[in-house]
Image 1: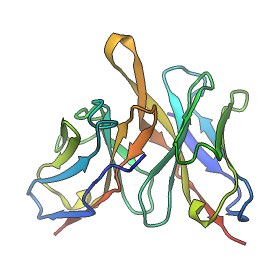
Image 2: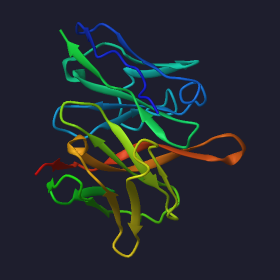
Image 3: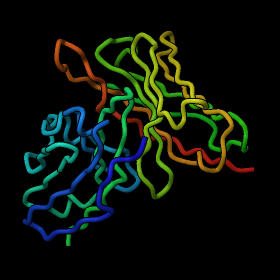
Image 4: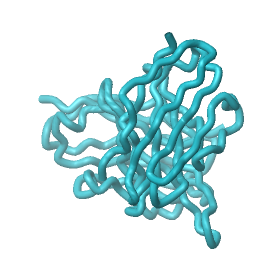
Length: 110
Length: 128
């Protein structure tokens, strides 16, 4: 199975919104609405920030939102803050009963 | 509060078998609301899903690793295990275990796919 495709890096200024895309195939993103996003700071384990395309776990800021259309999912962060600078990974359930991650996106807050 | 802790040898010889343990505290691995999974991350690179095990012991694996990987569970010790055979330098990575939560889909079927609790990870280096 191939990894989902994410941009290697995105950047934005404080207060601005940014969007990270995640592109898959008909065997993963196109087959299910079972998409999750994780935030990972260097040296730390990943942290779940979005599941079921757009749901946020308890304690996650409503500045984080998710969406999906066809084979492409997106993570949007509104009102960018310095603390949002991290790596972000998308993940999807697949038709082969497996999970697949995106390659990761490094977010830089300018 | 569920906590996970990975452990195992930090160094493995090429062609040998990598064996790791994940100790779970604060919750039973036999609770059917969750699955358990192993994920790895080479230094400076992205996440790779290795496989998962259900509360009843059913397993699913990454097709690219399926011939070399075994995930098992010991309910008496509340532990998960990972075995990866015939390792090479490409298996050098930080290995995480995590709890997998579920979503109810159509017709009452559950999909276990998002990781809501993670361990801190353990680094494994494959080298002679």
